[in-house]
Image (cartoon, rainbow, N blue to C red; front, side, top):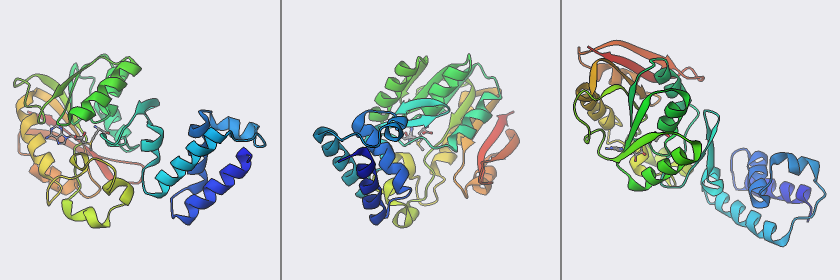
Length: 273
Ligand SMILES: C[S@@+](CC[C@H](N)C(=O)[O-])C[C@H]1O[C@@H](n2cnc3c(N)ncnc32)[C@H](O)[C@@H]1O
């Protein structure tokens, strides 16, 4: 079977299984099976698939049809122009989170803490894009292993700690705290995309009945860990802005909400007085 035929058949199977962007997904999976760049598919459409590549491609198609996200099959996700390794132990970094990094970088802070680092997308990017000293925590030891691997691979100097939020640090240790915490209400689970609900780690997604439990705790913790004048940068769920804004007491000033490309209030920044 040629690459062109394999691609067409793969796209058809994915489409019949109701997978989003079936052609694009088939291309990504075929490239991964071949360990080749996408340009190869277009340059050599008549090349015959080896038996081994066909077996791999078939397995990846099967996994994707069963709901496994493409990134957990190929183990990679681009974030802020870099390739991050991902496993089912970490949230797949989202493009919206790049707005969080952009907002955080604008403060030019010297000592930065990323709470709930997952794959390390925020912490590693902050360390690569600025001269800041960066620390990162996660409650999941498996996520920390992935984040440490990404930091090593991307040449980022980040200090990692397995901790509940920032509980391992002394008060007034940081100039900036950044976090993309879990923020989905547990009651939303039944209506969620199966790729997220059934595959991504629940500790990375869900935060109590309201979805706001982690925000409450992070705001309290940040008020202790930040120096006076330090900044807090939070990613917001698509309906979280009013509740998170309201939970910040009078010690938080200069509260700003920034919208993502869909116009959703996606990032909150605030300064500790
Ligand atoms: C939404 S994910 C964000 C991952 C990564 N920062 C990103 O933006 O792609 C939230 C992360 O917070 C971690 N987490 C959840 N509860 C935590 C806690 N109490 N203390 C530290 N980390 C926590 C999860 O393990 C998960 O890695």
